[in-house]
Length: 396
Image (cartoon, rainbow, N blue to C red; front, side, top):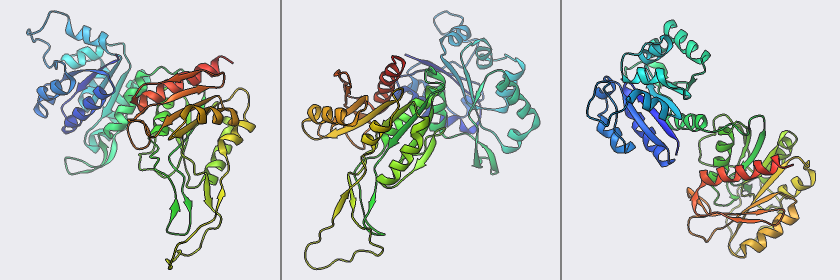
């Protein structure tokens, strides 16, 4: 299990660190919290203890603990050391080697990657002394999550708000992840396509894009450059990825073929519509008496075209969602599309399919291997899938 040592300093944004602890624990990451005296004025240590499941350290001279040199043991325990929120004070201490409390002393002793998420008044953040201290720390290799702009607690507006907790979480997860895909390019498709009938209506499916987005995030954490070709979804853009927004299957085909030459991996997680209306109506189709039929035509088979155009050094992965005969239908797809791996799942299996945060998949390989995976979060599926695809790439 990975361990994050989280330093919480005395700013109004300290309460947002509670959400961060909860998120990291859900990722099966151990969190050890160190609070400054000022931070305890904003949030009680008990709150972090309940969320982290571990004692919060606040005092260098607390005698009520099993004996160890605590600031050294915490420094050694850290896989990543994150300061959230990071005030001007702790940034200045870190830049100039000042160690006068438990947090700054532990920070001085750690050899783990250090990540700061600043939060302060705009005037403080833009002060030349603060900016010089940030530059010093960056030059030493420290990571920073840039603060957001907006309305501040003090009433001012400007840059200085703590970055969104989800952005900080992603930065920590990236810092925890080995960069074994550095220098590689991954193209991922995600979400549904929409095939317009008229200016009002379209044909589509229930895909939410969660699986494809999880793959894109995991690839970025591992150091890859990522192109994410996304149908219309309600998910936040993946920071750091080249986002390509599309609507129809034809638009997705164009975007995928454009990305293909630079791609080491193409992972087709999108639920692409097989058919589209034969003709788009410029005006809304009006309701009439009786039934209505709409002629449909086949959309291009993007995965099959990739199988034809691919280079031998490229790894191509498709997805297959079925409601019956999962292995039989998915094996046919694997063979006919000339791809390396098919990720197959059955919509009727509990925990699999659209919308949810979990999936139950079976990986089918070109050499005939079949690897079923148990129920797990889509992030875990993404991690395992990239492990397998990277191993295929490295074996060539």
